[in-house]
Length: 74
Image (cartoon, rainbow, N blue to C red; front, side):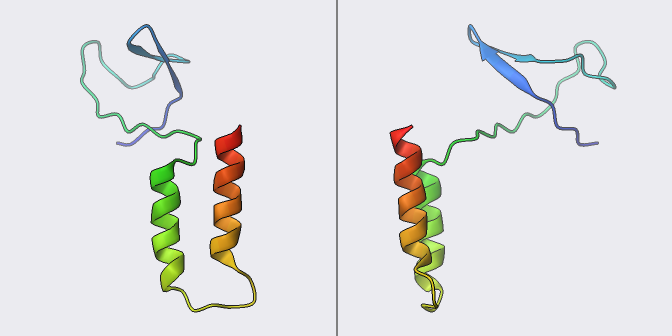
C-alpha cells in the first residue's frame, strides 16, 4: 500500500501533521522526502534533457535558467 502524508521536520524528528490511519504501533515504513524547492541538481537534470531537444520557437533552456535563478533569489 502507498500513502502520501505531510510531515514537518522538528528537532531531528519527522512528525506527521495528522494521525496516520492504517499503521500499527511500531510498524516501520519507507519515507520518500519531496521538497517544493527547485535545486541546482534539478536545474542540471532539466538542462541536460532540454539540451537534447531540437530548438523550437521557444528557448526552453533560457526559460528554465530564468526560473532557477528566480527560485534561488527567494
